[in-house]
Length: 344
Ligand code: KG4
Ligand code: ZN
Image (cartoon, rainbow, N blue to C red; front, side, top):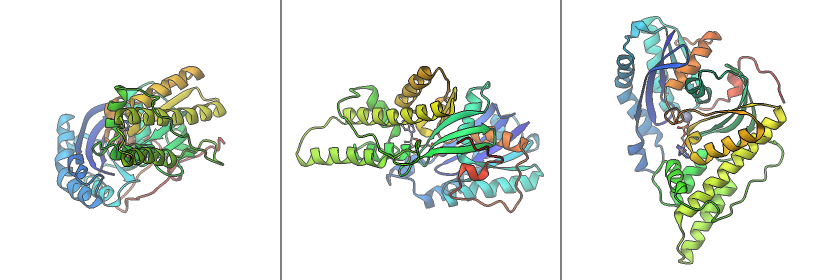
């Protein structure tokens, strides 16, 4: 079964054709990041306008790269939540139009479920249940994935998302937006222990995360040393910061995996591209004797192939939408879970 998938929840206009949820026939991503970088972050109004301009071309390219036409596909999947509302609406409206025109079923896909499903592409043998650390620019969750369509969020950030924290720290260090990958590059070059940053104390919610204290500690260090006219190696700060984030994510995931007795650990979202996070998760899973699954780098960030992968399993579970489908800016994974088994 071939699914044409569309993703426009933030600043990437993306389309892909995916076969049976696992085989990517095409994957086209048009990034707007060069334009948003001028403003130090994504400007929602600009994002919506650029999606409108790009979407026909990107979908056309995805179909031709896959060697098929609109009539050769079996369903249209689209990200409808969560994300920037104006940006989501472009993809949703376009997908609705395609579905009505061709008569093919329309499958609404949750963006975070898509990030998790990126792992089904990279690892054809991966099947739920598993524990997933989801770390992106907008979300940081520890999720129990019971089946392809059932989720239990057992830990979540109380404040900033991990990617957001990377980007804010990168900004104060003078790196371009989005700064996660620049911190990663800098961290490869130098000392990981030059600075000691705090680990958050999160009361209640055993597996909850928090990054605002860490972010403030880095910002204060940089500002204070500037005020004193002291030289600070931004590579050392970047490396120490990345090590702290990786340790926090690793420790929480380890605690959750131990508590659930889980031997399959999955990582997903833009921050899963980070080399420090990947190395830490490898250590954690080795020490637990657990299998580790992480997406190939090209499927870590936003793309439509992951939406096609999840769209397949949503289709099999009977999820469908019609022309009344709307975009939703905020929607928990648990709210779309088709049958949640209470694990904790
Ligand atoms: O999943 P994603 O593409 O978009 C959202 O759904 O939010 O994640 C984007 C986030 C950004 O914050 C970006 O800085 C971060 O992922 N990111 C990284 C790396 N590559 C992307 N963070 C740390 N290290 C990286 N190598
Ligand atoms: Zn994303």
